[in-house]
Image 1 (cartoon, helix red, strand yellow):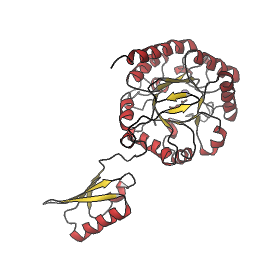
Image 2 (cartoon, helix red, strand yellow):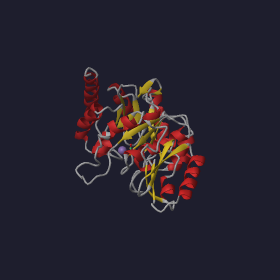
Image 3 (cartoon, protein in one colour):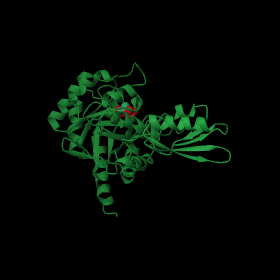
Image 4 (spheres, helix red, strand yellow):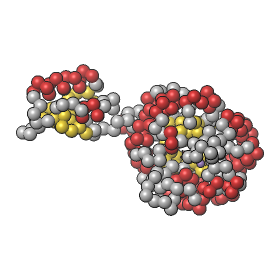
Amino acid sequence: MIIVLKSEATKEQIEQFAKELTSEHKVSVNEWTGSQSTVLGLIGDTSEIDIDYIGAQDIVESVKRVQEPYKKANRKFHPENTVIEVEGVKIGDGSTVIMAGPCSVESNEQLLEVAQKVKASGAQFLRGGAFKPRTSPYAFQGLRTQGLEIMLHAKEKTGLPIVTEIMSADHIDLFKDVDIIQVGARNMQNFELLKALGHLDKPILLKRGLSNTIEETLMSAEYIMAGGNEKVILCERGVRTFETYTRNTLDISAVPAFKKLSHLPVIVDPSHAAGIPWMIEPLSMGAIAAGADGLMIEVHNNPKKALSDGAQSLTPEQFDKIAKKVFELKSALSKIK
Ligand code: PEP
Ligand code: MN
């Protein structure tokens, strides 16, 4: 962290400030005195220093971070990729995982049919929403606890581990048998929820917020990890831009950026990014080529009748073709040095 001091700062004030910094934080302070002003360079762990607090001090002209504010999620402090194993399936080990299933769990029959079909196509996880974050309070809100029971039933029948979204820390006990808990885009900065999930020993799929930066996403991962739960999977699902042709804009550059900045696995959700079924295939291929560890894709047995996100859902047959191509691409990519 670099702190530029005001030219009128006295020697005593500077000394006092430097003393405060070293006694309150795990840093040492280097001082450069120029003809116009003095610059302090903080060396050490600055992640816990509040940059706004520093900027608010009377003698401070400006302050700039040169080190990322996240520590546990930072590749600098953990150079190896994090590999998360769920029911024998590894995420982040260089293989490709696919999480597929409907936007919403609607019935036992619907979920079981989709689960069996996506499994036959090679998906290793079943996704499905029981608690749904809908823009309108009048839209289908999900089957809630009954939806979770249906997910668990489909797991029992197919052996597929399940991924489903949590919307409130009050529901954590209901999710005890869920394999991966999803934090949706709308809750990426629900810090109380993130803190509560930090106390679990369970993988968390953290979706990037609608208008959140890469750094903000990593800070949300840091919230979960700071509580002790280091099993975080990042998910790029498209962000809001001026573009209206697609539902969101898939930020493919987030994949190599997350991989460079962090050791956590990265999943791409082309369904919520595109919002259009025909675009799921090229976006999936692009995501894998860019280095994603896997994909999350919405599949419905009857998209036209889906209770949510039918317009972007693939039929099991469409999904089957894409899954085949994705695995073929992955094997072709592994031959390129
Ligand atoms: C979902 O996965 O169904 C969902 C609501 O996703 P997002 O939070 O990315 O919009
Ligand atoms: Mn959806």
